[in-house]
Image 1 (cartoon, rainbow, N blue to C red):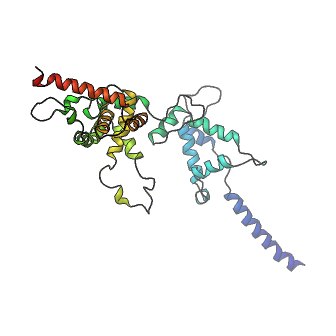
Image 2: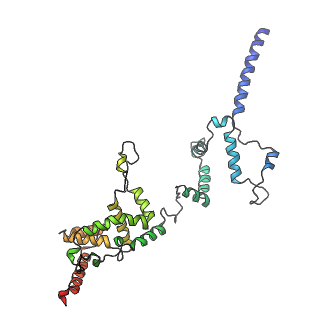
Length: 302
């Protein structure tokens, strides 16, 4: 009996030692802070009341230190894993932890936090943000206003198409694509200089959905921007709504070209509803005014 007891006791002692070692490695819910440690750093004096709280910076520093100490670092104590567990953990009845989600939402709604996230390229929008705008509309309008002052985005002026020699402009001078090609070539440089926000948006948006995949030919995205015509048309349509009278250069040019090419009235009116060109009657009125101006300025009319 004595031999049996002497062999069993060491085995039990060994198991108890291992269990104690494992329990000592488990994370404590609240880190121990001695009285001397509390006096090392001042409390946040900006807060008043009977109870003082540490500043957010100190809370982060102490939490980070707690997570990185001992075996906790090896066991994956990270903010990402904490946030996943904090938000995705369910109650015993299988329901989400709604109070935790509300706490996170309240934190993310803090103006300083939203501003910091926006600086990192993250823009948050909540269901109750009725006045929250995805785009900076004021900045976009300012850039559109700047583009309106440029010939390719301004008002349609037949006199600008006068042929060499100083002769008066005739309808035939605008019934071709030479001047459209010229405006198209200058449009992208103008957008880059006068509307950098729109330029960045168009560059990022007008890309193939497969861009970035290994199977996609990277050479297709190298070099200069390849969708200048589409970008020019998109901004022209925006300006056609923003300032339909003073920014009708491209739409009117397209309308006149279509009419001169024999395109039926129904087609022109259909494209007008899409914002591509003016209505047929507007195009004819412009051509009539150009014809009258040509006869008036012609030397033979005096």
